Length: 108
Image (cartoon, rainbow, N blue to C red; front, side):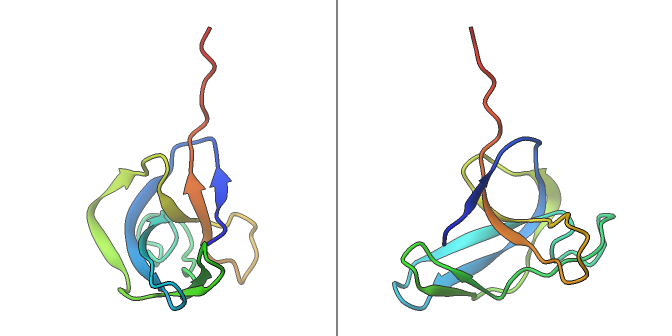
């Protein structure tokens, strides 16, 4: 999967989905930002997560778990993959694959 690296604000997640590549067999967990696959439960309009995404090997990975909820909303940890909420305002917006890297503050 070619993931974008998103920097900046902290991200809250509510659950996730597991994906497996049909080419290389690699499996991984994708967290879900508030608004993605939560059907408005947390105050944002609902956006679906893609059923199939690209793997790092170039193959296609598909959802093998369905939605897996967390007991509570929690912050996303640096380096984890997730589906970011698409703030474009488009009617067909859906979660976008990213890797979370919070902005590093310079120290002197």
